[in-house]
Image 1 (cartoon, rainbow, N blue to C red):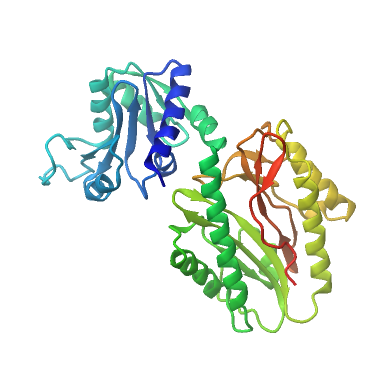
Image 2: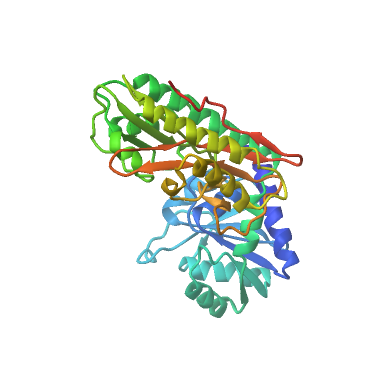
Length: 377
């Protein structure tokens, strides 16, 4: 991906910081640093300001890897982890800060003359921000809302990155369906999903793939086991791909082998709930209203009590981010939101169904991102 686009993400964050009267921001957490830099598997913390640009502070063992990846506008410096102070690495002059990560952040902030600093306290513990205030002599403010605001509205290029990740996930799911046999196990298919994503050029799974057979399909967050599929039974596969720093998410449920008419009717009911929820998606709609549409559809089938989670969530550099579509949500959909719609029905001890698509909220309505058929017969 074009590194300049990620600089645009950083500029968005700095503009929000300026609105809040902040001189600089400190971003911790892999997802935040990925969002602002595009780097793969970053470590440490990012310090950015209008006056001093952007500095990524990384551990010694990550310095070479990340300094090679880093775009020209990003300076990379190394810090010492606990117990490493005696190491004298062959780094360029000025590229090593002799101290811990916290001390390195404080040094960069002092060099920039920052007075008011925003820290994403969703990632950095409050005690760390208090220590930073003392070491750097700055006033620390919680900038977590600014980070959430920036990330939940995707630019066009971010949407297309997510679309590509969705296509990769769909290709992977088609391969998995082609692998289904009596001897298939949940764990083997989950392992194949990871392998296929990598072989197709992805960075990896967006999250650990869920493959569930038979009664295990009734567990929304099932962990794959050595359970064998056998002659016939329910199958649920929930997977996503990571392509660059952006992710995708989708789920399909089906019956393998003979019989399964009751299960297929249950899938049809869940698909109908998904479609009714999709019809409500447009800018200005409250997130809880989309959730309610799916529940109302399932209620008419006597199934709403078996729908035990929120309808969906935002997807971007993390698999779960704002906005969330659930009964208590105060979010309002706006153009640039990418969200999942994933109603489910779970009959404990019998089987469960979940069908999940991704959708973009546009200026006039919505654009479906996933394209694979919802009814797999």
